Image 1: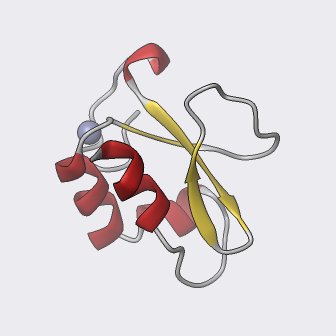
Image 2: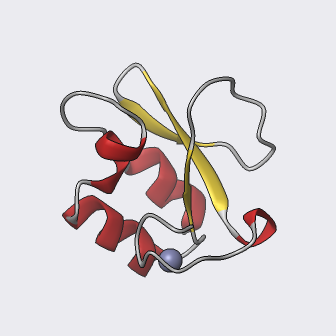
Length: 75
Ligand SMILES: [Zn+2]
């Protein structure tokens, strides 16, 4: 499920992101271990997820996650 728009989508249609040292990192090859969050590869969904603080919740991460790397990946 996309953490932004909360629409159920097959994993192949979603971008996996993980938290590394307080930064949200895109993981298109699904290489990073541990907990990941899934979001449509779409700026709108990324913004929605940010607004809902969906990433820290999905990743069980305290505090704010820097999403700059994911924005850069999508643009
Ligand atoms: Zn979405």
